[in-house]
Amino acid sequence: MKATRIIFISALSIAAVVMCYFCVTSVTTPIKFENTRAQREVAVIKHLVDLRTAEVEFHHQNGRFTANYDSLLTFLKTAPKKEVMKEGSLTDKQLEAGLTEAKAVKILNEAKKKALKKNQFENNDALYTYIWENDKDVISNGLAGFRRDTIELNMIQSLYKGEYDEKSIDQIVTIPFSEGLRFEIETNNDYKTSQGIRVPLFEARAPFESYLGDLNEQELVNLVDREQKLEHYPGLKVGDIYSPNNNAGNWE
Image (cartoon, rainbow, N blue to C red):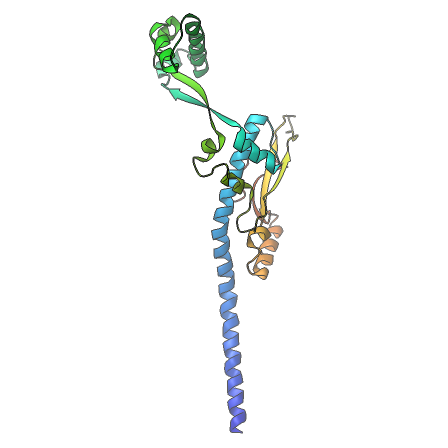
């Protein structure tokens, strides 16, 4: 009788421990899942932003977006990035008189052409010094010290300021924590607004399963189900191939 009582009490104790375990787990598992999700999404969002930067520049130079990973990466590695180096600015008085940035650049370019027909210069600095001091149109418009030069820079360095090089740039198409999966990219380069204006669109996506697939399965199922019921994309994405949204991310 005593032995039976001991076994009964032991069984109750074990049952209590098990119940406590499941109670604690039911609370800590969702918290752990959400904390890990938040940490991982910082990295995923960073890659999506960098990917958006590449797509926007590709569109700027080619008039369309691309869903081809190799084309996008080759573009980043080989295409030059043209930037205008600026020195000097127009005053309020010049702007009020009708002088615009475009007009000022045109005056400078005409002055440079005339100067190059008459003289040879060691470099651009010498050329600008000459026209600032001698060209009547430049002087009369108060453009001494005003300079605009278009230069070609390395695309990767220009866009990402040292974050990537030609080897590491491939990372921007890969979803972090996904064991090498790539972002899903789609384009709609023939989209037209109700006014008939062509607006190329792109979309890059990382479904929850791609970067959370190794976490608690039930929590992942719950997350996907919750987002789908809200008619949200179940994951992170930028852009939209069905409606212009200025390439915004769904977390923004």
